[in-house]
Image (tube, rainbow, N blue to C red; front, side):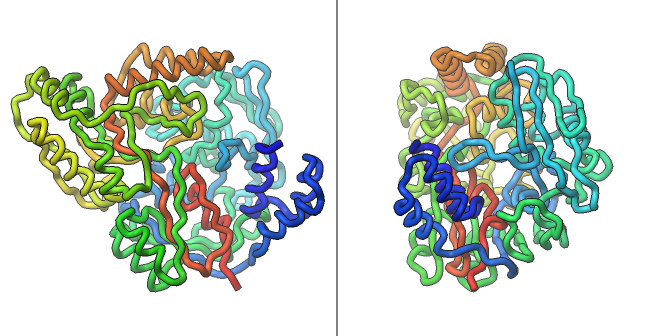
Length: 527
């Protein structure tokens, strides 16, 4: 009962359930009426207030951004699509699936899946959302020429079809986690799948796009025909792109915005002590990385990659950069927050002597290794790179830290330059993070890592029903990425947001910052 009750409590806290519904369902679970009433009163002390103009300050936006959800690659565009778009499903803070445009889904064999599309939902252009729009959306993202960040999730689709109000998917092999793919933030359902104008911003979300100024601001107005009354409380919402962390903090302090993301851990405690501001932080699956292209010299040398992995002082970065708002990484994208995590995988520690030995064995010529970074890569990214430079020097490994402009970093540096700082938000399942980033065919395989044994185990794990065997597959995959891959996972970060006391309804979400970027939809302004 505890798990189900916690889910009910979260939905009540987040405004997704009425007090009456909570009392009824809590009573059905065996909680006394008196106890349920007390909890409901504490959770609903402030009922959502409708109206007002909410302003959000975000980092990590660029003038090169687009409202085509296939290219969702940063906080700014993710926030924008949360306002104007909808996916079939969404992931709750407890990693359960929430029905959005799909009101039901089912499969008897994990190969053939049916998703029943909710009736009475409109796009902003007045067209009703239909199963055929879903087919066209998934077709566009899964096309072999697609550059969608979700393409790596969709390569095992055999065929798609629409039958009345049902969207059907047939896979090439079983995948019990497939419904989680339909919650991916790239797979925003668009009229005709976005094939006519993918960057129009026309979706089925609670807000219509009023202003689209990439790298500057996005403005939204409430869509009067939106189907879900539990979210979308404010009349207008605005996302301001403020890449400089000091300016972002100042915007919150001055009242220019009501909340900000990507708070630098160095200033989090100082902001916490300021009147009218609270720090909202939560740990999860997000992680900061240094990415090496394993097909590009000198990173095509496995000994050199291992030398660099051993030459970084992760504990020092947690202390000096994160100030305790996170935990050490282990050169693979999963931690104990994931189901079927294997805690027996050894934690990699800073070892300058071993790093020096691997560096010598690599035969590298001693030329400084260029590491590109920027303030916008992740909070504290420049300092982390400089600390890495210092710890690597003790192993005799020269690193040249190159500071790049924030604007355009995601389009000009990440996934382009062979060694750079980046971040990943994590995913709800191991299968999804590995399929998105590490599978050989993934569009967002930012290390160019290709390993047939890894790919084979990834597919095998999807159809394995024995949890012991499935866990072993994921353990083997983690070890392959950890020891052979091109990712240096520095840390698993806390999501740190700062919120004005003029805002209510904020509940931190371990999936991503700003309530999995749903704060503009789930929060409201106090009277």
